[in-house]
Length: 68
Image 1 (cartoon, rainbow, N blue to C red):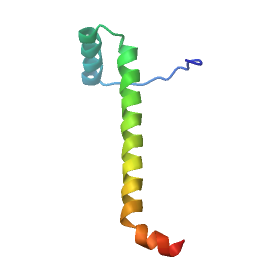
Image 2 (cartoon, rainbow, N blue to C red; image 1 turned 120 degrees about the vertical axis):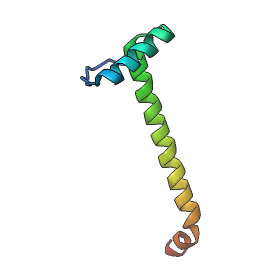
Image 3 (cartoon, helix red, strand yellow; image 1 turned 30 degrees about the vertical axis):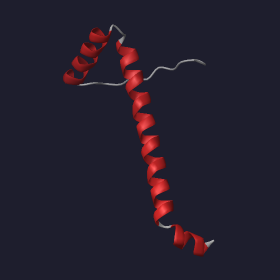
Image 4 (cartoon, rainbow, N blue to C red; image 1 turned 60 degrees about the vertical axis):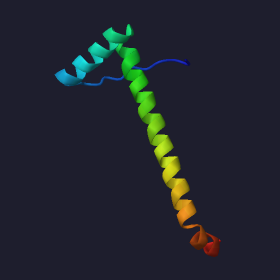
């Protein structure tokens, strides 16, 4: 990793308990649990965006070809 920065994130009691429980169950740090969740979220959003763009291009290809 090329350096780290600090970010303050506030969780409600239920969210905090879920993070604590996951970390304990998996034998990992709470930090690792949260960082993995952020990476997974970003990956899912990227995949969704890419799929939606591909779907739009496929659906509107005839119109896009005429405009080109």
